[in-house]
Length: 328
Image: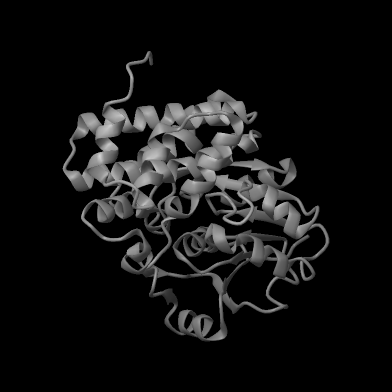
């Protein structure tokens, strides 16, 4: 099939991904949520809300309607986790035969608590499906900075994505451990909230290093029990994305944690950031998944207690430090 790559979701990551393909000379269409938003982006040649300094050269702009995906080779879904199932359900009847779905979203389905690939499959049917994750701040990708990500799912579609991104600033690796990729992508945002809370309290490098390391340990424990490979968590989806999300000033989840530590109520975070901090949406379902699997996630549980208002950031930190001594 020779149709365009259609990116549904004109947020920062969807826009950056479309820009990479457009610069490489591929046919790519970026679909905004409505005609007014599409007209604005088309008229200015840039996405002023999310990536105001990035020219969308070679990218067709369209509004979300039935014709937007009708000729697509593949559809890239780049929307918040809470919108993924609805978007995919809307696509189902208009998706061309054989066209694949690529998910750039990171988290768990807020309604079912399922991994997003499971939720997408339930909404879209048996279309080929791939998940892309890893350390990928949209601002850096769009600016042409070197970035490496990882993809898993339908093997043919993964290889096609590698072909499309070959020679660009976005290097894509294969990993067929879909469970590991998705659990890492969901859990790292929760750990980044904790990292931001520590930053908000003025904690130092020792604390950040301990948090990242122990955060990696708890997300690995959960993933392995659910059937993932331990090695996945030492790669781009796990350690790679954890480092970027816990340390970068570009990280929305780290910034959200910092705001919470400064006294901003969690319910106001999205308005402050102008974008979704997925860790706030994910943490309760992540803990429910862990409870069902019999896995303890102490850092994630502390984050949930702060987000729910059960305890302060200071109390959560004290509770983690007072846990019974154990081996690493």
